[in-house]
Image (cartoon, protein in one colour):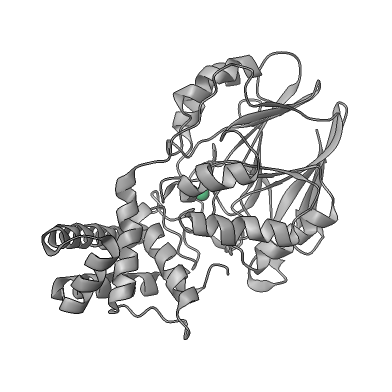
Length: 413
Ligand SMILES: [Fe+2]
């Protein structure tokens, strides 16, 4: 399984929503019986559920209309992950859940069609959206300030990859290239598509690593906005235990370097109070800190991560962050140093994207280098890849490896 092109087609998503709303308004007996049966509820309850579902889908459709109007008229407020690219990956929980349900239905249906009037489909869609009412998975907090600290060998190789949880051909190619480099650690910087459901965590993430990733590496993961669209249950209750990772934030350090992973998705584009309380105890000593987050601080296409910057302001002012690496934006960028911090975006893990020279910049962010080459696996889209960090005592060499084993560029810190 992997993400299907149809599911990333905005018109197809809109069509599915419109048909679902029409079907729910009709409320035929078969639909009612099938849904009541699946949910174990009676007809009066179903009426309330149906109204709720219609309302949610109407709201999602409004968002689609608004987004189109905004993209056309106001270039300062892009709302989608893929921005002006053709792949539709909305930063909207209901739409991500609709896409997630579509994906499952396409897998299930023998002729790979979403039968939008089928009571079984509408029931599945309803169950998927209803899960939103469950709220978020429980955030796992430290008890002691030295919790979630792990030893990084002084000589070691670490692969960083982000926005990789698609299970598509690029994800497989990138996993194979990571395996060839035999890293000791692999860190995923977040986003299992479409909505990080337990099923998606298994099929688009864990099974792909198992089949194609390095066998001996220790795996780590950060939380992303897409992981949270289904409440984060897939991430906290399935992904973290599979990696034997105790929480969504951690500190992997030796005497020279510190890889500090923070969760910026549990509170969207923010850092939870628990992590902020834990942070000062991590930033002691002379090791250089490389901060890793899913969300961006800087972006040429989206608003800056002001809330994160504000929360980390004391450490930025004190020069306690050496570098900050993030994903979320599906590109490979080297930014000019910001407040003395080396800033990199490595969100080009597997989602098809339009190379940035063909896109408009909307926000100020000084870019030194960027990946503009086409992907040999899909020449109308950009190249995918990951960052390979080779630590040798105080020296760190970084190679930005691409999906066919080439090198975008290298640098030494
Ligand atoms: Fe993201």
